[in-house]
Length: 117
Image (cartoon, rainbow, N blue to C red; front, top):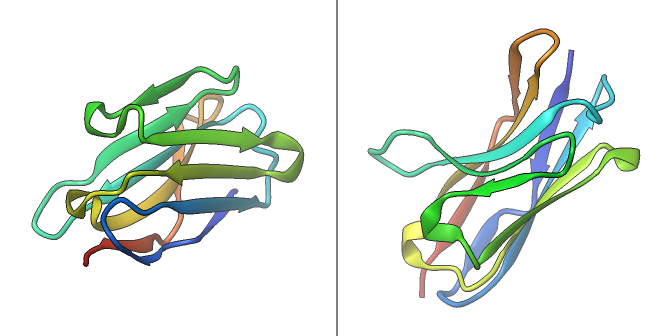
């Protein structure tokens, strides 16, 4: 079992930055694929950034060059650095851990990010 707790959300002006953190407890995430998803009001949840156990990354086209995902396996942490934020980035951001061994996804409860002037 993996428990995921997100932090770092909040209200920021357009063009500003936020850093989201996801702390995993209960299991070492070294072999897990970690990801950040988001869900805006009235829209489906979508993957924003993914980082594999080997460190390979993938980004949603609309956030490329602005967001950076990173992981610290020793601390069981996954961060999402978000720069040049836009109103359309407003959403609930959730951390996800995927265990290939168990073929199981684990989710955090989410953190609200609001980009508004």
